[in-house]
Length: 166
Ligand SMILES: CC(C)(COP(=O)(O)OP(=O)(O)OC[C@H]1O[C@@H](n2cnc3c(N)ncnc32)[C@H](O)[C@@H]1OP(=O)(O)O)[C@@H](O)C(=O)NCCC(=O)NCCS
Image (spheres, rainbow, N blue to C red):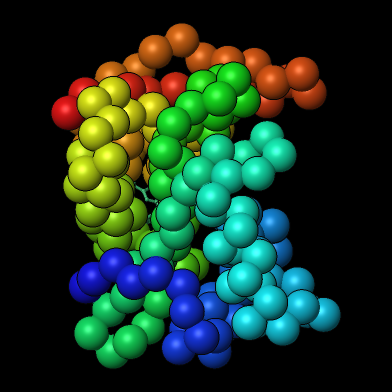
């Protein structure tokens, strides 16, 4: 298993991952593809977005890829927190392909993402999940998360917030 940055090589696999996604909007949002946007253009827009623009902070995206060149998961790593990230989304957002869940991959992917936040010099890493996302909370706890106060979004969604000290 390894991490790979998005590139043209991954177009078919990325589309396959999107198709497998279970109805809801793909997470992390940086990996969402639009039908009318060519993959080259998506990659260009992603590169600009990753530089940080408007209210987005700089970030990097990686696929978790297996030895059969299949995308197993996706992770978006934000370089620092703004007010929104501090309350809701944290430093790291990740997902695992529906057919590959419950095999320990998210726990592994978060540990790899933490190696990258280490390289970025982030000592306290904020990782969050919705209150009803038991799997995500388990993944965060598996990686040493210590729970802080929850945040309630204006529409009532409760976000659990965990710090991982490095
Ligand atoms: C949350 C998510 C990343 C977990 O991925 P995963 O690869 O299945 O997680 P793991 O296999 O590493 O499992 C971690 C723990 O969660 C538990 N778990 C996984 N799925 C579960 C479920 N549906 N219900 C209850 N527990 C679950 C596992 O048993 C494991 O527990 P353990 O370590 O105590 O044994 C995956 O379900 C997903 O992509 N969900 C949609 C996107 C999302 O919610 N992302 C997180 C918010 S950014």
